[in-house]
Length: 259
Image (cartoon, rainbow, N blue to C red; front, side, top):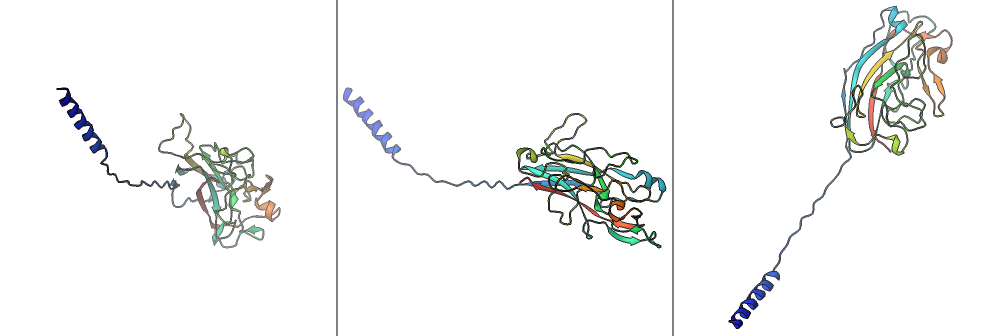
């Protein structure tokens, strides 16, 4: 009986060793390509028209409330800015001049910075050295000029980002961690009651010609942070004012990876 048990144990061990020595395997390589994704969704009319056909509109200006809605989704750190563009460099394109031309002091070189923006949803990643980091400041009263406070950033090349003292909607010039908004999406980001998320913005537009039409708020900041007035009197002399006519410009919203 003892011999039989030993034989059975030997057979089990031999069988186990035989099965353990037989093995076959195949491998497959899994590749994951994480492409950087930047997506900007914009809801806005194709044309936003400002018609000044009443003296009170010149005096008080015209505001287009909630005309543009911007929604951001990104897998990387990002910046968002608005830039005024035209085929005429940093001036509006004149499409039509009315008869008479407005007199000898009328000028048709109207700076793009006469357009003012106001954003709902503040810039929470504006760095620390910016003088005018975004457009979240409410429009100034029409009788209290605030040059360059809400004026749009403009550049003949719209893909040159704003500098340190120019305005961003979100983010800032520079590569510090506080200069760019982190990846995320308006689809998942939440905000408190009465506030917007860092990925959702509503834009108002204002044009204030004043009387005479010199656009007193037009202006910008240079690279040293100094205010440069661009109202028509500052640029063309004390008697200058806008020539009546039809003018056009484009507003481009650019979403870029923070560098």
